[in-house]
Length: 349
Image 1 (cartoon, helix red, strand yellow):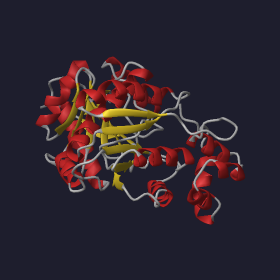
Image 2 (cartoon, helix red, strand yellow):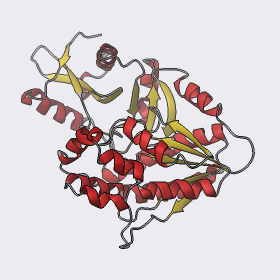
Image 3 (tube, one colour):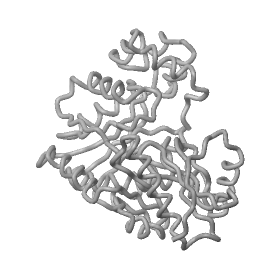
């Protein structure tokens, strides 16, 4: 095994970052937009021969120069990144890789969660991590009757979300509500969860779950080895679907409710893939038309965020639940409002 110097690459290091861009592109990888740490292996001439990055508790954008493969460099990069993650307090680690690389990472202590053939493999460093998550979910399983599920990001919780939850709850004996716990949204998870719980407290057949690390948002799904934006969305949808099917089997779920959003490319692709694939696994995909305002416009969390960004708080009153409105008009929301106003684009495509 050759010995190379591995060190952190700072965002201001233009020379190293330029080399990393070229190395990744040469290996068929686009640099991911979501990275918070990058390292590189340098040869004696200070040229980069391998690189890897992290985002939160995920390892990303790992590549070795074609001229230096077979020298054990990827082992060194992964070891460096894992040690860095441990030092940051992350012990449960994840990575996404091409299907033909999964065995290599398996040899380094990562275990397959789900695989989408010819697209992506989702892996973690705990042998029973996903199995333990499913076992915990199964403790809430209800026997008999119609069992449904829906996944909410609720960024923030609107009357449109409430309409979707109420419809699903009224048409089923039990409804499992999964709240995306990944903190990648403008409204933090602890606020989103509280607003969902408060806004749906009148419904007695709901079972709430945090999604944990297994259902992630499109904002942080890695895009570095996908050919274009639509391929990224399709890979994420397929991965999310594969994870959800295992969840549905653990809970006896027979239908999943999703909201229609005609203007959203992401939601449109998601809904198409789910409506095609879920029935193959015994799960009906119920696409619910979006609730509209009195003006005929659909109620959208993006529109709520835009109104907050522009200081039109009174206008959101007809778009959100009473508890959500109380939050945004209270001092507690000051930091969230500041974050929204400081974000250039709050409309998600």
